[in-house]
Image (tube, rainbow, N blue to C red):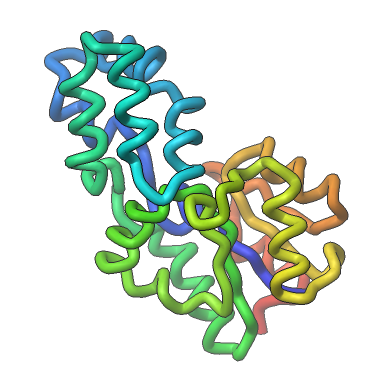
Length: 199
């Protein structure tokens, strides 16, 4: 069985609040922005693209009062990252050291993935990776999982997929993949060991 990791909040912490707590004077104002102009459905649209700019321009036209904050989301995007999740990165490296093939399917604007890759070299070690912004497909669209299977030559039951999103996990399972929903409190080492993947 091959292990396929999501990146955001599985291997690398991500939260727009990491940036916007520095931008807004109070929490309520920040949350109002994140519920409207900076809402997750728009963030997912930026993950579908190679560049932020088209989605950014369209969003500013829709929410001109938040033009400054939206531009900062692009210009200071790297500040949305909260650093690696060390215990999970250690498991990734352990799988690699065993000689196992490890892959990734990640929702990431391509240009922002390139920024992250330069900061965090462990992102360069996957046997293969699907970045949504390169493919024009975002999870939980089943086509991105089907693309993975076709590109790398696996059947669904040969894959263990790890993601922090319940919707993405459900989409992978619907295609026949094994999956772990990684959230706070999940012991990923124990989950991998129970499946005989750690030696």
